[in-house]
Length: 161
Figure (cartoon, rainbow, N blue to C red):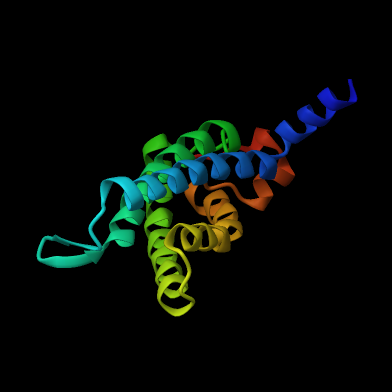
């Protein structure tokens, strides 16, 4: 009985739901990164539109996109479901943040691999975890337009953000 109460409290906690959402997106991202890095993109470099990219860069681009889609869907419907912004506006904002996050991840990934000589799949995990906490607040206040006042005043003061 106490275990059920704990689950209910956990499910009501927005940060816990965000951790679940981000965790699901993270697992999709990491699994896809590993699969692309080891199984689908086996050459060390690829030429795309006259640019040369490392295997891990292309693996990151694909896996990151897949993780973003999963993360957005869960975040929209389970974490910040009280947002009154349109789904299209939320998605555009979410993707905008994700693009910035992609380049931050790419920079950290490159640093971990080239400077610290980390194994690329481990460097991917380290880069993602390094940026996790900032993403909660950015998505809460920007992507889903939920202010601190919104929570203090309660759901009855919804505005058309």
